[in-house]
Image (cartoon, rainbow, N blue to C red; front, top):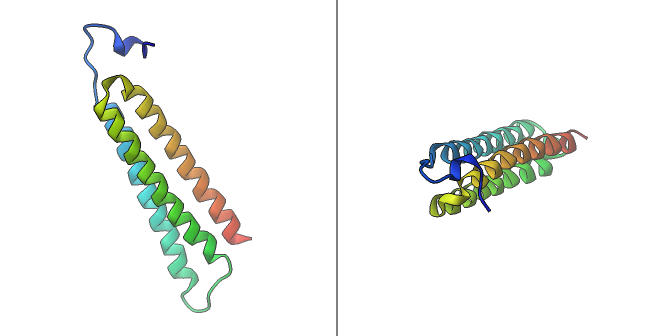
Length: 110
């Protein structure tokens, strides 16, 4: 099955779109994991706050999603026909990272 206009004969595949999307997914996961870890440190500052376990789960989940973004990058590099799928999956991973961050923040606050 053809991927669309980019897979027509004579058109060059541009890998920068996939690399950019996957790099953004890894960077976003790293920043959100750092935010969770900063919340853990600030929550333990004087008296441990309730819900810190959710922040730990949030940081671990963000690192797992970063690993998933790297796992999407590798097959996209190996198979040129999968580049578009890899870029779409990286975008979906970014949306999952944002949702996971918001969910764990909500659970930690309750």
